[in-house]
Image 1 (cartoon, rainbow, N blue to C red):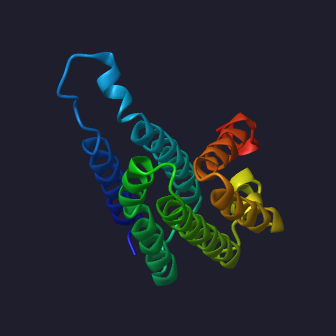
Image 2: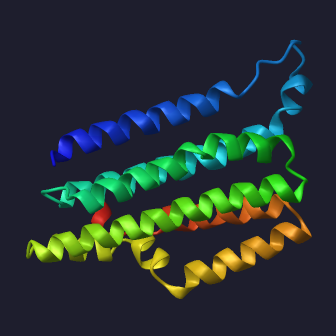
Image 3: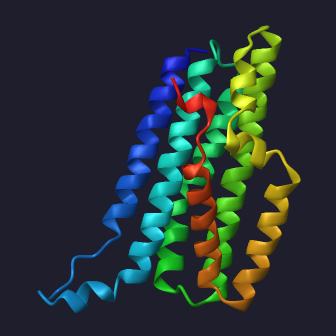
Length: 194
């Protein structure tokens, strides 16, 4: 399959998803600065989701730069990843509207977890394809922090802890997700030097 078409489709959908999220931010009906504060929880959910998607898109772009051909499996795994990403605006809007409620935060967590898991499976399929093609670029993907984390026991341990914390104090679920993202961003990976 033509790799460029899959990349273009992915780029377009990511752009649409981010646009949908920003359209959920309502302009206040008054000129008072306090009016925007009423939407502050959603702004937090939007910021976390935006950064997550930006980081994922960057890593996705890097992985696709390593591969020469897209097989049917990678195509459908990419679609699965996009599917879970497409639910992030709903999850972010609901979690932002009811940031102190367990249900919306669990929903946000489950969507994010499924999206992350689908990314890990997609990454692994790309590595397998690269190894099948006898390309050494699979090692570059294996060297990515996000790949190492998602394929380790720590991903599942962090998920369980995050899930349990939501029942104690719901906003902490999103806060822990954000802290995990920040820890990924401050690491300097060899693949970033390209």
